[in-house]
Length: 472
Image (tube, rainbow, N blue to C red):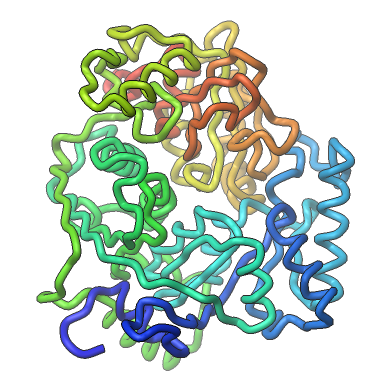
């Protein structure tokens, strides 16, 4: 395509096999890599078997067991339920028969798929990655376009290395200035979602930019891109820079000449200065506070110093009804202070916030303190590699001495698909990405926040501004 282009358009153009309509919005898109899990892949493999098809490039796929596995402190291969056992056995059979590398629950590199792929260097700038999980957007932190696909699309990808794709509109989100101490990338993306709504970026690919984004670590950017899907975006990007190159260098260990060639190509992966955007949003970094959700959608959120809203303050009838339903489910009252909401559980984990930087931040809060009486708190590292690194740094002992459970890696309590679930009515401070009704267990009540905020809530027994500990 001629003229100035966004980074998103450059990546799409580089991977376009051919257009499928006259205006070029629908196209056949080449996909560089995928990651498969035991939950969303079975039907795709069954379709391949029934059609007698092979996987086109098995070396471009990685299989990871992460959704249904138990995360108890002692790792075992057995699944807690018959359904999970069937899924993992069929997944192993499929990976074996189709020649795909598999990280099962006993593999030393097992973990949550979107944590494992970056830490292995399997995703690099300029790639397109499609996978059967909506949070594949995580890889935008590395300058790669990632997006979730359905089961039929997984089958199509495995057979052809392509997917049928519809080009998105472009949304530039600029976050300029300096974040205040104790304000995290999780707070930035939660503030964006609150501002534009859970469907505010539907039909768009987001590119995050600005001085606050440039100052973020790569792991922080992963949190940002991971949760972009919660405002409807089907893609999220940050232009690759020196922070990304430094992150990847030890993971790839390429020969010097190949590395230099890659850097030359990667440095060109930027939106043109005069590129036209379909929409632009600006946030002032200094105005963002630590955020928590009060409702049952990620956009039903506010700063920790705020209050539960009143439905009467909402003008739109449909939104007012949503607020009324959310407050009824969450058991909250209009005007109630957010920092007075008591919790029963505290969960640090998920593909959003279970990397080593997340555990360090939470550890800084809990070090030398104890979990409040009556609160069950757990830490589930994002991968086995993260768990080993945390133990090498002594973080496991920090959490254990504070009264947290130190568990094995997996999706765990992010979703009620394993044995880590909330009981009806239990209230959880969670570092995850979704707070839908029943997401963490039937009748469970979820408040989203950063890992440091979860740690603070675990210590006090209620939603708490984590900065009170860092300033102590």
